[in-house]
Length: 155
Image 1: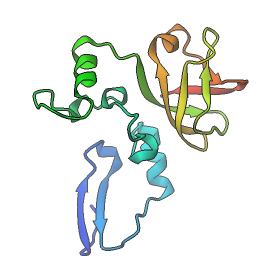
Image 2: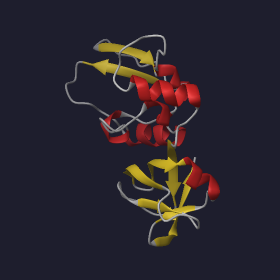
Image 3: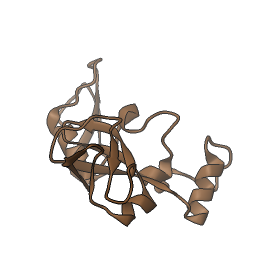
C-alpha cells in the first residue's frame, strides 16, 4: 500500500497483481512504464485508447460483470442483452504480443482470411486487437497484413 497523506489509495479492483491505485493532489496523471507493461501482460484495457468511445461493447472486452442486466435503460442495452443471452458475439477484444513493433489500425490476417481483425491500440509490440471470432478460430496463427514475418500472439 502506498504511504501517502496527500490523497487516497485502493487496491486495483481489476486484478490484485496490479497493486494499488492512488488519487493524489498532483494535477497531472502519472503512469509509469512498469504499470503499462504489467497492465498489458495481464490483458487489462484502460481509458479511451484501449476502449474507443462509441465503438467498444463491454461484452467484447469480457466485462460481463460490469453490466447489471436487471437494470433498465443504458446505452447499448439491447445489443448487450442479446449478445449475453444468446451468446451471439461475433467479435472479441484480446491482448496480444508481437515479434515486431505494430501500429493501431493495422489489419490482422491468417491463412484463411485477409481480415481477421484490427489492432485497436498498440504500445510498441503489445496492445489490444478486435478479432472476428469465427475467422480467428479457423486459423489462430495471425500476422499483420502484408507483413507475414510480423507474427501476432494472442494472449
